[in-house]
Image (cartoon, rainbow, N blue to C red; front, side):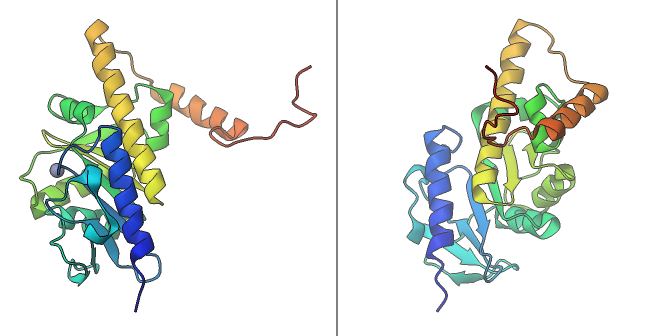
Length: 225
Ligand SMILES: [Zn+2]
């Protein structure tokens, strides 16, 4: 008997965190995590209030979407999750109707690089063309627009982020929402500037040289007196 509790718990914990942060509202949005032992996928069930999501409400499906374990019908966006996992090999997928991301998705065709932290998501973020929720057309649209990035916006719908781990996918969702909020706030003041390709290349070079984003102990070499 396979113990799916850890992967179910990972999904439920992520849902509660994203709801607390205001990215998942009510029953809108869904989260999936690949079980590393079996390759099966733990995914939120349809109709669950995500702020209160519990491990036993999380369904387990195989790569074809067949229910392997669980008492509840998986999310209507199951095909989207399984399609992204199959195409990218990521360990987790988060789909939200987060307010700022959804607002941007209603107006723009892409999110150019507005802040250097956006490079953590892979650069300019596409807006996948609109298709009805829960359809193969939407799954295909999202998968093509994702194209090597860790985030994509979905026209007049919301956003998808990915990660090697669920913690990473959640952080990417929070970062995407912050970037979309930044676009909205800066647009209220005027026409935002974006970082061009040479500015982006310089950021990547500086990040590599300085091991940006990692905790670095102070050594006698770099300690300032
Ligand atoms: Zn949705």
